[in-house]
Length: 581
View 1 (cartoon, one colour):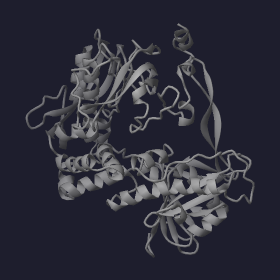
View 2 (view 1 turned 135 degrees about the horizontal axis):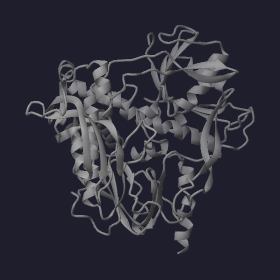
View 3 (view 1 turned 60 degrees about the vertical axis):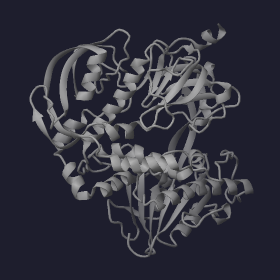
View 4 (view 1 turned 180 degrees about the vertical axis):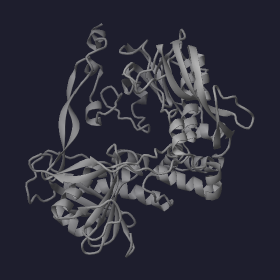
């Protein structure tokens, strides 16, 4: 963006929830560098007013949910005759950066008066709710509540409570962004910030030498071994109301394996069959064709995706028909410990050079900040520690979506195919493999009491700290006890509720929502807190329907969030029957 220096703002829209009257009824705008109190926040009541204000100067303006608010801006742009272009917008044009999955990163507008605005998504910088930002950064302002459905006709004037609500929303993000930008973290995402700093630490020439750009075909092969965290509800306790237990989290799981594990670098060597590690090339990826049967009293850890024979999200106990998977030597050793495997073929793989300590300086810097700081700096340190590994595995296919205006509604179409160079996918592959290995082996060591795991956490049905875990609330890579529960219900991966012990009810630093009547910690992927915070065991009865799940619908003017029903899956044991007994 050329021209005058750009000011930096945080903005937010409040909108009508009626699909027949979709419009902005309130907005706030806070200068990141100067706003300190609610009185420093600019407020308005119409989209026309906002557009007039934002075109007065060059700026970078953040929204904490650009995917929602940005549609209102694009709708207005199309209605005013602006044209979407792929890049380098000139006066009367705009461009967008929206992923194929619909994630918004930026919206750049070249206004007709010569000014320019780059709208960005602050959630990509601070990936948490505004309420969580306020708590984590220990800000004076807190997230407030309003009635989103109250009648607000055209010409509505903001009440004092509405003014305060909007001002708090933008101030919370503005104050957090000021701390973040003050640390030099100015990229579009916190992952990009982390990678940029790491390159500065090791030097870009050294980075390019250690992590060369590999050919697309090779990267695609390596990427086949890239898997996420291990999330599993043990079938022995699944759907049952359990007794008491304890939950443990690994302190900085991903940074801990990056700190002391042998990790890949350089150009790999292709090997036929099963690669043979050497001192210089200690790591490998291999394509394996096999069948498998889970050993007795072991947790499953093999997922098979992309085939109709298996459910993508389930971990298999038996694989009777041969499958072919790409995996690391770390994965293969784990699988062989947990399954009786009949390996039919090693189809070749890649040998990698390996070294420990490549991230020592970076991690020690941010661990020091995390350990010695509170509030915002501590939260930023956690983000920088946890965001680096994933950036190495960024997908080179960056084909995105582009906005079109059809039937007076903003819609999105897949854009032209577009690619960029990979970073170094093997790093992400091995970091995640080591992390899974830590969690799965810890679950196995506590098999008798293990009930649930999610990436870096264990939920054990136990009334004392187990000797099998290295428990320390501060040491990187050790396990920290998060809370004690008196009963729990684990339905499936990402769906559970736990009733905290009475003395745990005010421990809200973990980011969970606690409730006065029973202090349930409830998590259901895809459901908003307004539903989960009121849920109890009986709400998990198979087939139970609840109202309030929000689904976006694009309409003339922008987007509305419609409340729809959410129904628990029909299968599974009766929860009500367990309660009655």
